[in-house]
Image 1 (tube, rainbow, N blue to C red):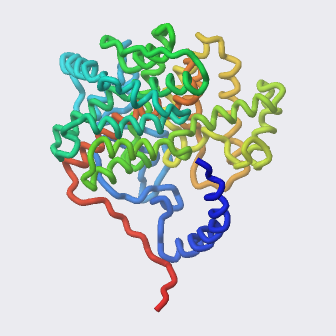
Image 2: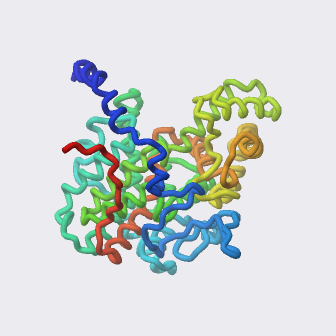
Length: 442
């Protein structure tokens, strides 16, 4: 399709949109509007109650909020405790059961849950060929979203409004998300990059992390350490409170009475936004830029000077940001980053990537110091989970096109838990208010 005539028209009309849709900043203060549903200190506007998770970054003492090391709780369990207590087992499925059903599964319950997920790892006949491989795209999130909506056509109970149907659909999507992501990538790699095509069916005896690596790699091989690190990364990304953008989207769409497939497609559309799910990609782009412009990345003085240029909008993308540092909620530390860092060090040693790890560690130390010097900030700055996650995925040989889809593979567990909680406990459609400031003509 030739878009030139349309763009010629739009080039004349775009200034109207800018002029008529720009609202004076002073009006937000005048009417007490919290932009992004957050106050000036970054605290979110309270819009709901949940028993699924809790994100903690402050404690209250004598009416004052005091920053503390970040904490992340799933159904009353600290994420650090959940991961440290794995004792060699894979934890994603166990934690998914905990989030969705609200209690920790015993051994027999977990085995039954794993059998259910294994049985669900099937796509309708011809689906891979007719849906995923056709109109292949580099944007795997779009490919997955299209697949999710198409799967609704194969489900006779899409719009029943029955809780059991929604739970079944959530478990099915939890099981097939890795297939939708990996097959979508292979289709893109074959048709757009002219690579070889291979489709591995998931192995019912393998965990989600193992199956992802098995389906992605031509030979289906992986080490135990690789699978363990990916499993931990998935656990750290699977839930983060009801207020993050994609989870809030899940609850908003659910509150309207919409079906599971439409709800998860909406959550996917939210997550793919670069301000939400693409942070680790920006970290990787920044790291490559630093390598290209710093002759000796182990020279802390030279590195510090270049990071200073990045903050002064003189280098990289000129946005003035050191990506991977800072978080909307956490100030002193992101508990997910603290856990992941230990696994990063083990993987880097196994892969012979210690020199690159040193670069990350130096940025982790120098970045907050520079930000404190150059910025007037309301809270501390520390590395977030995305600072290292891209490096982990790269060391695992996972292509960048799958970074955000991996986030979705994890987060579908949290989205499912919040959808079910919204269905069970809520009775009203979520409908926030907007104050009209338009000019009116009689």
